[in-house]
Figure 1 (cartoon, rainbow, N blue to C red):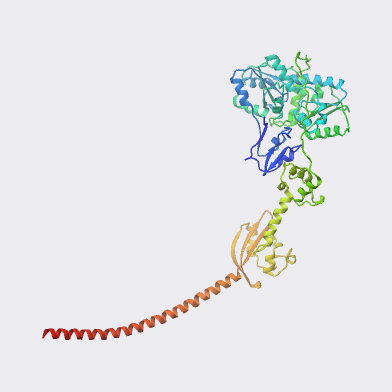
Figure 2 (spheres, one colour; figure 1 turned 135 degrees about the vertical axis):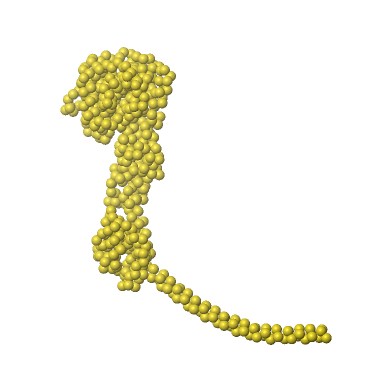
Length: 561
C-alpha cells in the first residue's frame, strides 16, 4: 500500500520536504520530489511542511463506507488524542457523531494502551536489556530500517492499536470490521502487517471532514467515562511512563524522548554504548501523538496536552483486567536500508562539478535540503539528489552567465544608484567613453554625460524607451534606454552607438539628393532633345503634306479632263 503520494503539478521545486525529512527519504528528479518507500519511515513531516499540499495521504473512507453499506459490524477504535483534535465536541458528543456516520460502536484505543503498559511494566522488571516502546510505528520503522542492531530491544508486543483491535475482534467476532482513527500517518502501514487486527485506518483530519459532511449528532451512544482512563495518557510525552506507574522525571534508568531528531540522538547513543537505560519511551512527534501530522489544527500543543490530561484525570482509576485468551506478543524483524557508500574520490568528483574543489568551497548552507555539501554529494551518488540543487552554485552560474552577456555586449551598459554613482561599467562603455571601469566606479555619471533623463526615470520609476541622445564631448550620437530598479535603488542605462549609422544615413541622403539632381538634369536634356526632334519632325511633315496635296490635285485635274 502506498501511503503517501506526490502531486507533481503542485510540487514547486522548493526542497522544503527534503530539508525537513529526518532520514532524507525524498529524492529529487528533474526538480520534482518523490518519496522513496523503502527508506521512508512515514513520520509525515513532509506532509505538514509542503506549502503547496503536494504530499497526499491515502484515504480509506470509501473502503469504510463500503463496509457500512454491506451491513457489516463496523467498530471504531479512536486514539486517546481525540479530545485535543475535536475541541468543539464533548467526548459524549464526539462518540454520538461517529455513531451517526453508521458505526456500530466506538471505543477508545486507550483500552489497548493499558494492556500494553502492563506488559511494559513486566518487561522493565524482568529483562536485563534496554526495552524500547513500540507504541509509535514511526519509531519502530526507524529502528527496523536504520538501527537494525537495536531491533532486539524493541518490546516484543503489539502496539495499542493492534492490541485494541484484537480485543474488539474477540468481542464482536472476527468478521467485525475494525477501523482505527488517529493523528498518525504511519498507522496505514502498520495496518498492513501480518496478523493485523485492523481493517482500515482513518486520520483525524479525514474523519473531521467526513463528520462535517454527513454526521448525525442526535444518534444515541453509550459512553464510558472511566474506560481505560490511565491509558488516556499515552498520546502525550511521558504518558506511557505515567500509565506504567513511573512518575519520576529524574530516573537514570528510564528515558522519555519525543521528536524524531531526539529519538535518533538517543539511538545513536545506545549504539555507541554511551548509556543503557532499562526503558526508552520513544515518540516520533514532538510533544507526543497530540502533535501528529494528521491532527486537526486549531488548538496549540499545550492546550491539547491540557485537554488530554484533564480527560484522563476525570476518568478516575479503573483496575484493568487483562483480556483472556488473546495473544499480544510480536517479534520485530530488521529491514535495514541497504545503501552503498561512494569512495572519497567519487564524492570529490561530484563536488567538483559544482565548483567545490576544496573543503573551503563547501559552504554547507543547507539550501539544497541536506546538512552538508558532502551529504548532498552522497545523495547525488545514490540518485536521490541532482547537481543543480546547489543554490550557491546555481546563483554563481547565473551571475557568471549574466556577467558574460554584459561583458560581451556591443552596447554600453552602465549601472548607477539613485545618487547617480556608477556601480558597473562594462567593456563597451569603456570603449565608448574612453574611460577604464576602475577609474569611474564610485564616480558620478554626471561627470561623463547629461543625466536629466536618468534622474527622471529614477524619480518616476518609469522605464524610458530608446531615444536619441547626442554626446558632443565624445563626438557620439547614441540611442539610450533607461531601466529603473526602485526596489534595488538602481538604474540601468543601455547605450547604443549609432554615430556610424547616422553618418551612413547622411551619406545616403546626400547620394539621394545628388542622384535626384543628376536625374533632373538628364530629364531636362532629354526633354530638350525631344522638343528639337519634334520640331524637325513637324517641318518635314508639313512639306510632305503639301507635296501630297499637290499630287492629289494634279491627279484629280487630269481625271477631270
